[in-house]
View 1 (tube, rainbow, N blue to C red):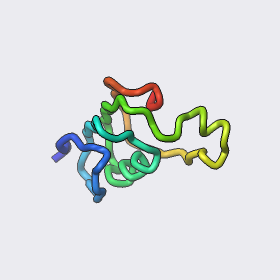
View 2: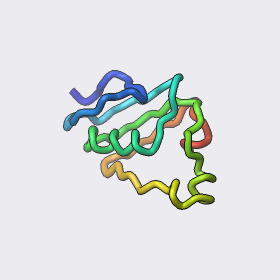
View 3: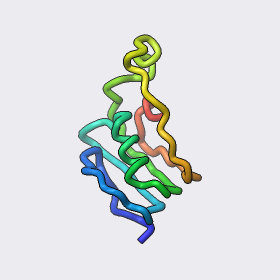
View 4: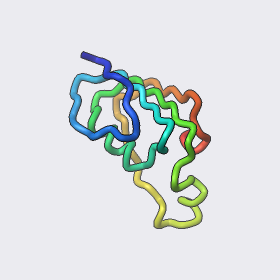
Length: 93
């Protein structure tokens, strides 16, 4: 199986070694930095990732610049070749 049903911000985690295509959406909560870190670890061979979330993040990029304690580490998706952003808040772009 290379695909999984769309997931939301309440994704509980796990390890999915064969999933290459993933769609993430949420209309209730934003996707925060820690969530993307969890996705990177849960789907290590992900090739195609699509995001849909119009809710702003709790910590904006400007807040990260103004307050270094809000800065986040880099999250790597080493196999990602396509990233789709549809109906997303500017914080995700």
